[in-house]
Image 1 (cartoon, rainbow, N blue to C red):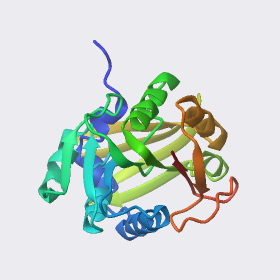
Image 2: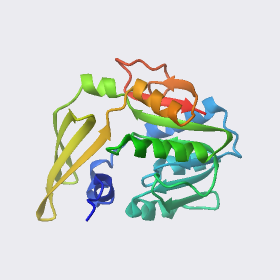
Image 3: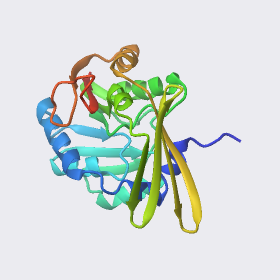
Amino acid sequence: MKQKDWFTDWFNTAYYHTLYKDRNDTEAQLFMKNITTFLELPKTSTILDLPCGKGRHAVYLNSLGYKVTGLDLSENSIIAAKKFENDRLNFNVHDMRKPFKNSYNAVFNLFTSFGYFEDDKEDLLILQNIKNGLTKNGVFVFDFLNASFVKENLVAHETKIVDGITFNIQREIENGFIKKHISFFADDKQHTYTERVKYIDLEKMKSYLETVGFTIDNIFGNYTLDSFNEQTSKRLIIVAK
């Protein structure tokens, strides 16, 4: 029996949303406002948020006037997101390794939602699907951690208490992956999950994008769209066509 991918289980649990419940919506909204203004995206644009989680970016993009689709593998996240649906905002369960039915003026891959897979071919397949899913002159926005910065500033151990649950977090870089081991006791049992994303620095991402035919237009290092600096930037944000 094929082992489930780590994200299939972890993203579908209530604990995942508990641990990350304090994610900064103000920062996310600032980024969406800045990037759509920078791109001069007309309000007639269709945007795909992939993967969309519970829809926090998609809901805000929709409030700015865009027609937005959010796709995510987690059924629980999509159920939560569907509460926000309207005639210009919809959510569906979708594995980003599979092609999309529609094409979009912009595809946003946000908040380090990439590099989950052992095999580079699967990451390239996702990028190929995105390329194929863009309209002529469509734009791809990629928002990832800055792997070089993470490596230099790795917090090996951390404890977070959220809603009475003590999350013990350990981080390491091993076999080309940035790993975050999360263990906690809740609902009368011990739980352990590991998040892992591929160690993808700017050079590796450039080669990925070139392989599927993307051209990079801009590279930013944070949500206020300052220039990227490999040593000091916390994010790697790429705009490609």
